[in-house]
Length: 117
Image (cartoon, rainbow, N blue to C red; front, side):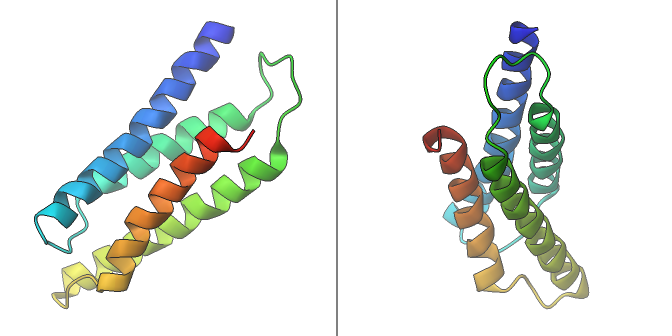
């Protein structure tokens, strides 16, 4: 059971890597765009995160405050991706603040996963 939990943690981190990596590519190329890979990364990270929030196969106390904070940040990132995608489809472009917040919040969420014990 512990091995399965570690696999889910890996999938969770890969989801954030997809989201942050796709965002970083767009940032480095100075394109304020939302890509499909960002949406897929968010989905993978979210589903794996929800699976990790279930208390299966753990012999320690779950930190539900941390889980709640990470979930709220994930929902905000999702909302920003939705806003940016809608603006992009309209042809008005993704606002710079929305684009940069996506990257910053993704980094913060990954940092919370690693640093908050």
